[in-house]
Every structure is written in structure tokens, then in C-alpha cells.
Length: 442
Ligand SMILES: *Cc1c(COP(=O)(O)O)cnc(C)c1O
Image: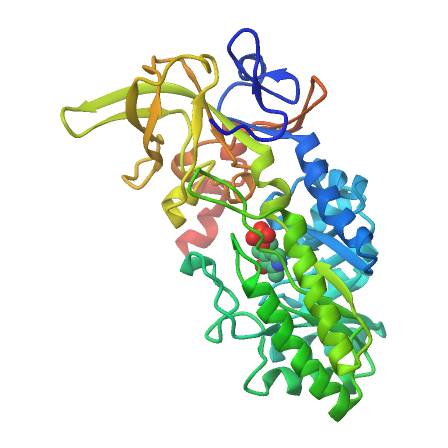
């Protein structure tokens, strides 16, 4: 069994995380429950930052908060000296509520609304990553209206295929994101941005995909962008201050995944950009990266209680848990794989091959197909590992199931950072039919 961070089996044979017994956590907070190993998040953050420091490169490591956004998480990112990516008014609002330094916030997205752009300007975020021509002109309008200049990165699509699941590919030419680097769009955007008195063009951004296991894609992307930068420096005297190469660094979900250490991605990216800068006689830009999954993914564990079972003789045995696609939609959406243990009997021999089903009215609501576990009894506690990224952030209320709470654990202390949704919360946006009666009858 692979354990992440501070996860271990204690004397009682229970899984513990951050020095906290998961059986006790489940008793205290109920299930399902997201548990985050704070020490591991810190370790991951420092791993990235130290690599830049060691290689003496000016950098920003921005946490892509879409992976898991909450006030406490954003505050933890601030404590670790990270910058922050947001992609919506909601994520920006969370960052503001957390007191995150606004000059270190980067605003992303392929369809930012006028309200979102105004909000970003009003709060003086560090930069806006401009995705397309409509946004560029909308931003100019908003800036000139408010007589405010804004720092901008242009998101380009370098035409690199990252070897990962198609649904999360964003770097190839046929993409909804960014200005195409090869067909001249990026250059046109560059000239438009350089022309505008309201736009301070900091540099170029690209993000080639997610859950990527080798450095080839990043190195290729850096190479292609540097080639263009050389061309643009000669033609247009444009030299960027910043080159942002995005996130997407892969993590280990199961034994089939074999990621390289985060530092290696950073080292190879830096080496390539340095090489190309020297080759073209360009100034070495600051390198920014935007890890999401690789900062918080393996720090998260979800605890469930085992409930009903269904044995289909000679086919499979289904064990249902008290959560599912509500709190983790990735298996249904991406066919994502996970590992798990019985947290209350972590030393028991694994005697059965079973499949873990969620409780939603959807056949696709399966958390794990085929996993070896001890004979599971109703009431056992199942811990699914590596659910820290895109788990809570994609959680939903399908079947009107309340979203689970989130607990941070560190050095034997547990802190509730998102409370459990109540049944009252479930209906708190609903309006009774009568309140609309006037409109309804007209
Ligand atoms: C999603 C995303 C990230 C983070 O991706 P991870 O796979 O979680 O590291 C970073 N940058 C951009 C632009 C993204 O869309």
C-alpha cells in the first residue's frame, strides 16, 4: 500500500493523517469527510519554490485555486508565499475574503465577463491572462472607462499535444483556449496589446494540459514560444518580462502512475528557457508556473462509511458508500482511478475483490472498479486517497445530497475549514411557487 505524506497506520490499526486518527475524525465530523494533510501541501509548495531559488531564477509559483478553493486553503497558499490563479468572480471573491495579497492574483478564463474584468480592475489584481480577441477589446474598454492600466499575459496555444486524457487537453491547435502561436493570431494579439495605452504587456502564458508525466511537452512548448519571442524581438522589439508555462504536473493516483518529482519539471523548463535565451541573445524572463493538482491532490483523502452491499454471483460485489459522484465526479467524468484502504482495519488482510459504488441514481456513479479489501462490513470506514484536487471543487448537489465538510490536519490538530452543508442549505436558494404567482399567471 502506498501512503502519502504523513499518512500511516497507528497502534490501533487505524489510518492516521497529520497525527489524527481518521476513525476519530469520522466520529467527530461525520462522513463523507475530506481530510487534508497540511504538512504535505507545505512540502509540495516548498519543493517548487526551492527549485527556483536553488537555480537562481526569478519566479512566481501560483496555486491554481480551481483545484481546491476555500478561504483556509487560499490563506495557506499565502502563508507559503505562493501567488494565486483565479478563473471566476467566485474564486476571486474567495481570495479577497481570505485577505490574499491582490497583486499576486492572476485572473484566467476563456470568457471573463465585463463584471469580472471590472472586479479584477477594482481590486488591482496582479495580472489578467487574456485569452482571445473579444476579451482583449473588452478589457481595453473597461480599462479606458476606469482610466486604469492593467498588466496582461497573452495566453498562447503552442500546438503541443500532451499525452494525457483528451478531455483535459488544452494545448493543441483545435482548442477553445488562447491565441494560436503558429497561424499568426498570437502575433496579432501582441501588436494589439502593445498598441494599447491601457495594457501593460508583461509576457506570454501557455498551459499545455493536465496530469502530465514527463517534461517533453513543457520543453517543447518553451522551445516553440522562445522561437517566436526571438522573431518578435527582432520584428517588434518586444521582449517579455514573464514567461508563464502553466501547470499540469502529474501526480500518483494509483500504482499505474509514475510521476517524476515536481522539481524535475521545473529544472528542465528552466534549463530550456536559459539555453534558448542565450542562443537568441534574449534576456532571461521570469518563469511563472501554476500547479494545482500537484500542490493539493495527494494531500486530500476522503473518508466514507460503507453501507449496503450487492453481490452479483460470479460477476462482482458492489459495496456502496455514503458519498460518490457528489463529492468526487472524476471517476464518472474522466474514468479516473483511485486507491483506498479500510481506515478502521488498515492492517487486516485483503481477502476480497470488490467495487465501490456511490449512492447517486446513476449507474456511472462508481468510485473504484475492482479493489482488494478486507471483508467489508456495514459501518466500516473507507479512505480513498489522492482526492485533494478537483474533488471538493467539483462537488455538487445532484440528488440534493449536501456537500461534505473539509478538515485540515497537522501535527495532531484538526481544524474544520468548510462546514458540512445542511438540508436547510440545500433549499436556501429555492423560492416557493406562490412568491412568483403574479408573474406565473400573466
Ligand atoms: C487547470 C489549470 C492549471 C492547473 O492545472 P493542474 O493540472 O491542476 O496543475 C494551471 N493553469 C491553467 C491555465 C489551468 O487552466
